[in-house]
Length: 439
Ligand code: URA
Image (cartoon, rainbow, N blue to C red; front, side, top):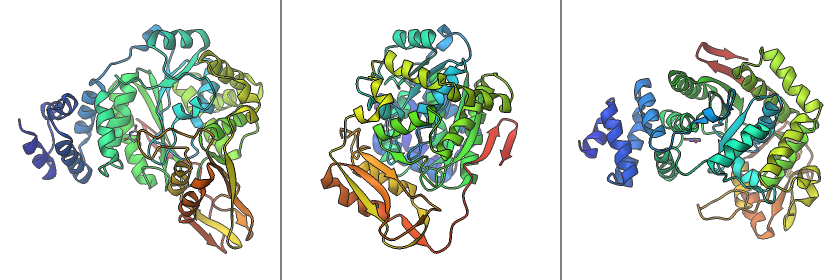
């Protein structure tokens, strides 16, 4: 078999066989297929697509390119909640303690920030002392003892995805439904959970820009998971606006704690309750209404926040910062970004807001960048809000020499109008193997 011929086959719209996919993925992982040929093949996939059987086989081969974690040493149903990524998207920090406080085990591996989107592991590390690299024995012990551990993904999990993702990131092949589906589901199948609730974000801050594309991606991932014997459902959630007000690592931890204390922003709280309820349904805890009531109850009685503190403490974190946010390491400076005119915020490009926070130091521009965990943005005005000239739209936090570039980035995505835009739904649809339920 020659990689040249396989690139040409996909370029011409052909369907790869399992043996061909094994040759491509295996050769890329062992280095016999160079980056330039893999890039060409992935661009051909981007342009020509893949059939459902092709994606299912690619996912399976990618999942088996590294360790397959066996979570059977942890009793009970284990539920995971991968997201396709967003800005200000701190739902994992809120939902996992809620679900654990309801008695469902969380043995979760999460990622770091990617492009303009944030990552749970970076956010957790903003709590001083927190360890996110537990070995398997410690990971299992913690889940068995306190019901929850959220750690970074081991380097040996879905090794092919790690290499393919790095190449996609620099060859304009990230936003491709079959490649995203195989990337996410290969990691999740390898990570071993019994049930998976996918948070598929949609809008100008997400990799999928339209609801229809997001539904298609969700259907593909649900089919892959179901075929592999996992219980899977997906919610299509809005990412035309950042979730909540805070963007940046310690800022997002603080806002997540506010939700767990019952006083978080309404949009973030609502999305978290819906995601948590759906995870509980997948874990067999009851009907959607019962599960939502359970999730609300553990916020109201403080047990979800207590579970979160217990998790951070078990992983070495200084939990005093979760009570008193002024104990977080503080940013060097702050800057108010003022409205240039009266009107409504008609749109505020979420990817650009995410990129502005990256420029402030909350995310990485190169792989080697060290994050400023206190850097970020607090939004005071979001899409649909009325503003007066001179009012603060948002506050930047970070090193002062970074403010000008971040301001230019932020303003380039801001559109005012004298009309108020229609509010977008927070959750557009639920996708299961039974079909699509639109809200
Ligand atoms: N997240 C992933 O893990 N992979 C993708 O391809 C996109 C988002």
